[in-house]
Each structure stands twice: as structure tokens, then as C-alpha cells.
Amino acid sequence: MATLIIYMTSHGCAEKAAGMIREMLPGEATLINLENFEPPPLEKFDKVIIGGSIRIGSIQKKIRKFCEKNLEQLLTKKTGLYICCMFEGDTAIEQFNKAFPEPLRKNSIVTGLFGGELEFEKMNAFERMIIKQVANISVDVSKFNQQAVKEFAQRMTG
Ligand SMILES: Cc1cc2nc3c(=O)[nH]c(=O)nc-3n(C[C@H](O)[C@H](O)[C@H](O)COP(=O)(O)O)c2cc1C
Image (cartoon, rainbow, N blue to C red; front, top):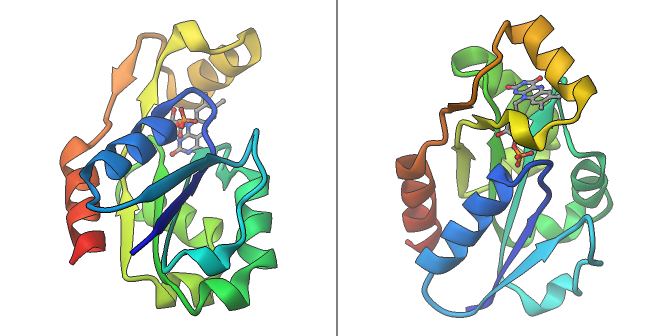
């Protein structure tokens, strides 16, 4: 059973999750960063995992476009969807719902909210300013939920 993991990241959190999922899945899994690579033909895969991160309320545009463009084909696969983001609870769910088309969400076998990380060294001046203004945070924070990633991979396997 071949699995494709498609992701995008700004500062590495969604990429870390993608790598962890690949390590935990049995069998062959292909990891594609949509920022740098075209997705391979989906016919080859029976499971597709799609993940990204939230910035100013939205997931990466290329991830959204990928889901919209390939929606019909994705609906024929076993799919798993995840986001990395700092907000928790209802806001995280709203951001997740906005990130992926409703039919895809409803058809997915697993969904994941993995939390997020703020690492100021990786941010540019504009990003630092946004985080300071919006969240009033100026030191590194990690809410990355490794357990949630593990459970996601286990449920994807089952
Ligand atoms: C400029 C900026 C804007 C952000 N906006 C949001 C947001 O609207 N909602 C949220 O939950 N998290 C937000 N975050 C937090 C990111 O989702 C978090 O840092 C996540 O771990 C990023 O994952 P990545 O490194 O894979 O891009 C923002 C972070 C930055 C730097």
C-alpha cells in the first residue's frame, strides 16, 4: 500500500510532522514538499496525507489549490488531513475547516491538529512584529503535540 504525504511549511513544524508520520507508517511512503516539487500522479497511491500550517488564518495557498484541483480523485482515496497552528480549541477547528474543502474533510479517515511552534530566530522582522502585536509573545513557544502526530499515524495505518 503506497502512501503519499504532501505538505508545506513556513518554518519547519508541518515538515517535522510529515517526517514523523512517514517514519511511523509501515510500507512505502513518498514525502513531497509542494513548495519545491510537483506532486506525482495520484493513481499510484491509495492513501494521501495532506498537511500545512496556518499563517494569519489561512493554510498555504498551494495546499488549498492542490486540494481543489484534485478533489474528485482525492475523494477516491483514503485521506488524512492535518494542520500546525498555535491557536487551540474552536479557533484551531475553524482554521482547519477553512483550510480544506468540506467534501474532502468529510471523506477523510483521519484529521489532525498538531499544535505549533514559534521560533523567533526563524522569523523575519515582519513576522516578529505580527506575532508580538497579535499574540503579545516575544519568546519561543512550542505547543507541538507529538502524541497527536503519533495517534494520527496509527489511525492512518489502521
Ligand atoms: C507570521 C505568522 C502568522 C501566524 N498566524 C497564525 C494564525 O493565524 N493562527 C494560528 O493558529 N497560528 C498562527 N501562527 C503560528 C503558526 O501556525 C505556527 O508557528 C506553526 O508552527 C507554523 O508551522 P510551520 O513552521 O510548518 O509553518 C502564525 C505564525 C507566524 C510566524
